[in-house]
Image 1 (cartoon, rainbow, N blue to C red):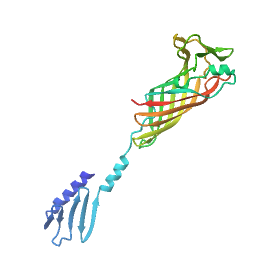
Image 2 (image 1 turned 90 degrees about the vertical axis):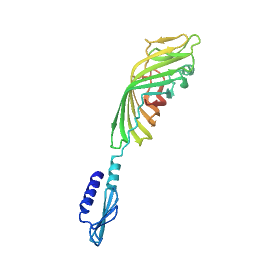
Image 3 (image 1 turned 180 degrees about the vertical axis):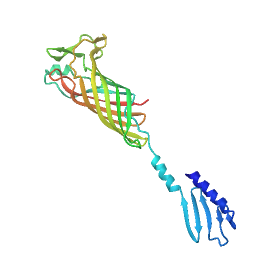
Image 4 (image 1 turned 45 degrees about the vertical axis):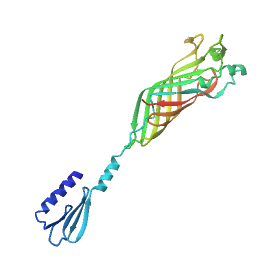
Length: 273
């Protein structure tokens, strides 16, 4: 638009010089002897006319600014990173099915219980032109490790999970659960600075086992009565490089009447590569 406007201006100026009586300066062309009719080039965006004693001007500057504002948009910041690292535990626990001693044996050491999720596939669906609102979805694997607070473990006996004491000086005993992890979040990105996203996680159990160190033993064939399907809420807040997350499931971690009552919760950071 600017080039067309400038070209037309130069053309008018060139044609006008054929009948012009005087050139006042390099920006003004006088079209008659009285000087009442003239063309003044103010800048490349604005031309001022004086015809019959009346003045008016033409400008493309407001239009140019409007078009720039309409084109201005921001890249959506993804709310799902390549990898998420954190800790996990059970909350709202209820060991009323067990004795006081059994309940102490079944508790987890929260600081040692780790959470790792790998988002193998992610997709971002924009909901507006500016890119500030989107739906982020992913598919991956989540590994949850629940480390027992003492030298204890669980075994399935008499239709329920029961605590057992381990022989020797076991360095770490834990319950390992692996889930097919499928998050979906509504994401709001503020320009290119930060984002906040909330949504749901669908986790499908694909494997569980008990493991211990010193001596190193993996119990692969033990029955573990974890709920096979978990649906929970998730919140992510962060920037392009990393974010913090919290996952919580209102569903019981173990099947009803087969283990301690309680819900899964995890928190940590996610990293984008």
